[in-house]
Image (cartoon, rainbow over all chains, first blue to last red; front, side):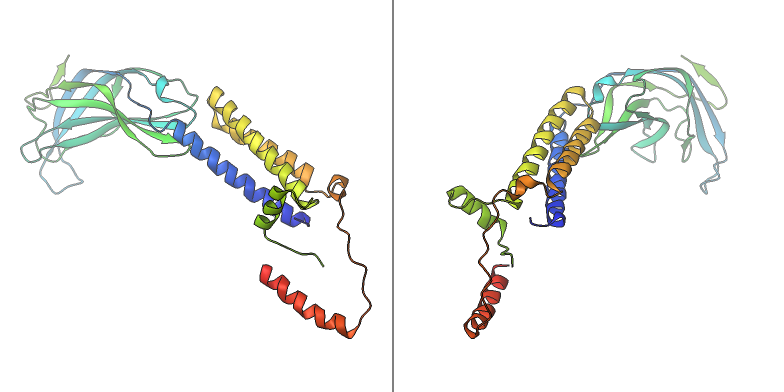
Length: 180
Length: 109
């Protein structure tokens, strides 16, 4: 510790170690928090088409169009360890060929500091709701759920499903609209 | 000719209160204390206002203050100068002593 450089070296290394310990402390104070929030989803319109799906070799596939309403208050999830939330709305259903299908219809990134009251009306899906085949027609039960991925400042990235979902049946025939 | 012992030796001597060290050890105590204090304050403040950014800023502030206090060679670190032996004239006995001392230094390092 007799030269400036050795003192500077020791000081810098000590500061970095302390910073690492503080970051771990930040993680440990919020590690076991429950990040679920009630979510309200409502579907207003469902339409079904049978079109050529050029991404696959099959003949024609079912394409669904959903118009939905979404309301949730995600403020309780944000704390000092959360940088942003990645929300996504997914549809789950079963067909004859697959026991479980999951399709993401819409997503949103919510940064810390933005408005946290989600109140969306008459939203159209962002992504195509294709089924590989004809599994959507006359499907009794398609469940829509909102989930989110918590992106922290330090720590694990949990994947949390909101408590609240909506199940809708799809129409029996193509090109017709069903209103709820 | 400066003896360079490992830090554990210093803290051992300090705990037994046998030797009063100056220079580097005082500076080290100062900056460790400042950074730990700023870390505790920063952690508490960040936890209260729910922003980890402030914790980082406070620790960086503590780091800057420590730099200012401990890096330049202030007079307070020169309070207890080591009393060096007067230089001995070059004799054959002296030259025999020197290689042994060099060996001892290298071992401790």
